[in-house]
Length: 298
Length: 169
Image 1 (cartoon, one colour):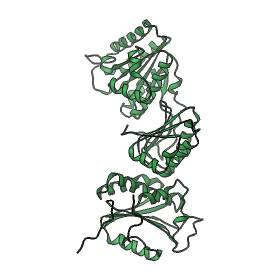
Image 2 (cartoon, each protein chain N blue to C red; image 1 turned 45 degrees about the horizontal axis):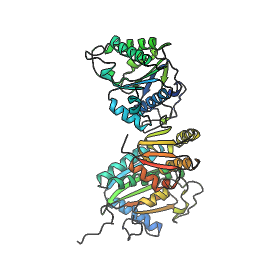
Image 3 (cartoon, rainbow over the protein chains, first blue to last red; image 1 turned 60 degrees about the horizontal axis):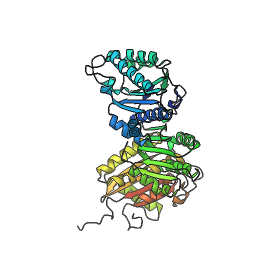
Image 4 (cartoon, rainbow over the protein chains, first blue to last red; image 1 turned 120 degrees about the vertical axis):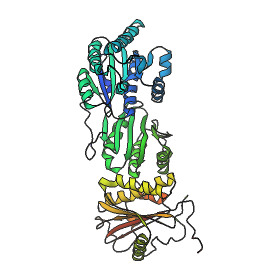
C-alpha cells in the first residue's frame, strides 16, 4: 500500500500522461489499483482506435477486460468484430504451454506487428497486463530479457507497447530491473493518496475517481481535482464506485461544482446506493446538471 | 421518516442545559458505555470505524449504521473545524436505543459566545457543508448545548422505525 505520511498531493511530473505517448513508445504503467490499469489502458486503447491503429489487449480474462472497457465507452466488441482490435488471453500470447520464454513471447509480439502491417494498419498499440508474470512458472527469470527486446523492437516500428505492472504485487527488485528498458513511465495523475483516500484523474470517461473515505480534511485536493475536471469540455464523470464514505462538506463541494456547469453539460455521479442516497438527501438530484448512477461496486 | 417529535427520552436533555448536562452524564454512567474515544483531525477515520463497528454489533441495520456514522462524523467534524479542534465521543445503549454524545473539549471557539446554558444550535455553522442539517435529518433525536466548557451534542438512534416501548414490569 502506498503510504504517504499525513496524506499529500503527489507530484505527477515524473510521469508521462498516457494520452501523450508517442507512436513507438515502450511505456511502463505502474498501478496500485485495478481501476488505474483499466482506466489508463482504456485511454491508450481509445486513442489507438481513434488514430486508426490496430490495438491488441492482452489480459488474464479478455471477456472481463472487454466488459470493463465497455463501461469506459470503448466499443471493444465492435472493434474486435471489425478486426481493428484483438483481445487475447495471457496464455494465448506471452505465455506458452511450456511456461515462459522471452524468445517465444517476442515471437508472438512480432507476429502481431507483422499481421497489423499486412492488414494495412499504419501502426499498432499493444497493451499488456503483466499480472501473468506473478504466477510461478518456468522461465520467468527471462522477464527483463523480454522487456529489453521489446525496447529494441518498438524503435521505428510504428508499434507502441504499454506494460502494466501492479506495484503492490511485483517486488521492488523486479520493478527496478524492468523499469530501465521502458522509454516512458505512466501512472494516473493523482491529487491525493494516503491509506484512507485516493483522488486521481479518470481518463475514460473523463473526470475524477475517488476511492476510500472522503472528508473535509482532503477538501483542497478535491477542489483542485474538480477544478481541473470541469475545465475540460463536455460531460464529466465523478467515479465514486469504490468510495465507502463521503461527508456533507465534500458532497457540497461536488454539487457546487456541478451547479457551476453550463446546464448543457452533465456531471455523472457514479456511486454505491448508500452514497447515491446521501447525494439525493442533500439535493444533488434536483440539479439539472447531475446524473446519479448507482453501481454495486468496482 | 424520523422521530424528532417523539415523546421524551429519559436520556435526552430537557429545556434546561444544566439539567440536561446532569441527565446525560447520569445516563452515560448508568448505561454500559460502549465507546469512549477522544478524537482530533487525525483520528476521525478511526472514530468512524469504531462507531460503525459498535453500531453493527448493537444490531443497527446497515442503512441506519451509515446514518449514525455520518451523524457522528459531522458532529465531530464541527468540533474539529469550528470548536476546540478536538473532542470526545461517548456512545452507549439504553432501552435498545443508541446514544452518541460528542463533546467539544475545551473552550468554545471565538465568536461562539453562547454564555452559560443556552441552546446555541442555531449558532452552529449551518452553512459549512450542511453538516448539522444532515445530522438533524438522520438522527431520531438531537440536542446541542453550549456552555463555558464547550459544546455537547447528543444524538439518539432507535433500532427500529418506532421508539422502544417500555415493557411492563
